[in-house]
Length: 223
Image 1: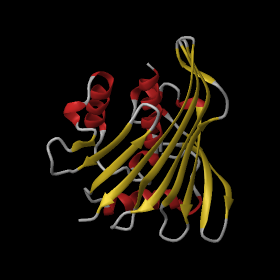
Image 2: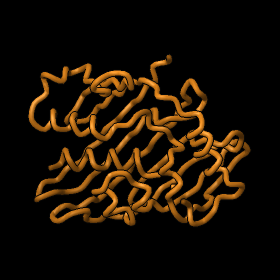
Image 3: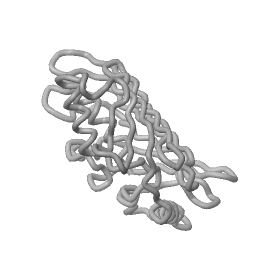
């Protein structure tokens, strides 16, 4: 149960993005999303996942079958929950997680928090439409978000999803803390992708306390 919950929040972090109900000045977010959509390339990449339950190295190759391979441990050595987790990832992973994704068109209440000469940071409200995971959509209103965007050639450099207070996403489950930070890096095409995702979640489920931290690092394999 706790493993499924942790995976759910990881999916939420990568998928929670923004038609903004409060338009951004100059439409920089729209420009960033459009530029990324135009420049998209189906890159191969390695994905390292480190948590209490997993220490995996995966490779996504759009030309392979299956496209997502487990390098360490080998897929044939996985059993039970581990094997099912890999299969779910294979079903859901479509390619490199771009920071200025199409889902970023679906968040609401975008408001300026701070800015400097190079970047601006905005807060936003995730919506059901901005989250790919059907389960995570149920508690979208409990979450808040922030993103940092460059002013020149707009693109996202950082994305954060968090809960401002505790909540119960499902029966007998209580979340005391949820904080997910995505740090973006430039791919060979110049557009930024989620290079590192750090997820922290603390709470209790079915009378058992949990405090989990996971780190996912993505590295593009240059063509």
